[in-house]
Length: 292
Ligand SMILES: Cc1cc2nc3c(=O)[nH]c(=O)nc-3n(C[C@H](O)[C@H](O)[C@H](O)COP(=O)(O)OP(=O)(O)OC[C@H]3O[C@@H](n4cnc5c(N)ncnc54)[C@H](O)[C@@H]3O)c2cc1C
Image (cartoon, rainbow, N blue to C red; front, side, top):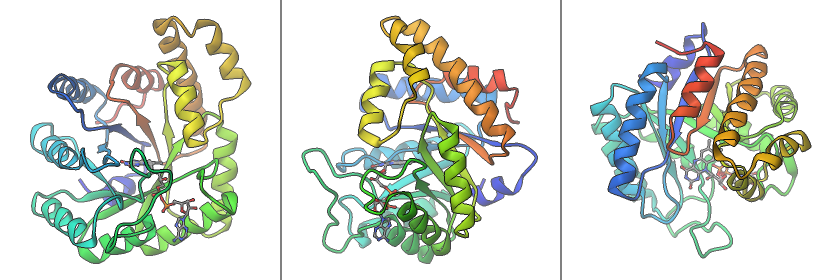
């Protein structure tokens, strides 16, 4: 199903789940098992990330096509500007169109390992805005984009810049924006209000990261500029060595966070699953919002 059609169904917030293409056979077995388990909550779509260095790009396509063929769930293919010329991006979009893939999450991408900053390749694109415009001109795709309630780490002009570029993404054809994960809903509400004032009308779908491994999330958050409140640190630090206790607490925190977001009328919840299913299923069931 197309993302634009999903978003028109306003009776219930959309649930979506993000997976990365596994590198090993064991990881792939786990992926299909998780997708099978997630059938119980019937996510509106499954998005599949696109690797920075080029190595996972074929795998992204294979997993996206596999989701469509094997599971009956709707896939959303992430696509970045990293390492690809317009011609290569165009070929991939043709492959997707021919396979009936209708939804793309268009991103700039991060610098590949070993590089400090993002650099467009000759004949490639510098920003997600360029990629969105390109995809929009190539075919009948439903295009989503990314946005950052706490500001993108490279934004020179802070959140005002991010909102300006978000509006540009909307004007170029993006129909919704999935956010970087955050733990402090107030930051998201402030960002949403400011975006609204700037003329952003597309839905902003909060990215939710259940904490299953505290140290890992502290590391990720330092890299991507997500703040972790003292309250979360205080709850997680004493139990950080006990992964079961951390996961239980992570689910409880995410349920409380999602409940408030739903009360504030968000159009959907996008779960960063890190290729695990149990926490997302537990959260969705606790909220009583399984789809289907
Ligand atoms: C939901 C989600 C999914 C993601 N999936 C992936 C993935 O699959 N693969 C992957 O490699 N990475 C992924 N990322 C990470 C993302 O690629 C990085 O955060 C990247 O640094 C920025 O991507 P972007 O699309 O937001 O870039 P952009 O929108 O291009 O923004 C990058 C920076 O440039 C600025 N900017 C934006 N537009 C312009 C413009 N037109 N002119 C000048 N400056 C501009 C912005 O303020 C920002 O500082 C994802 C992020 C999110 C939130």
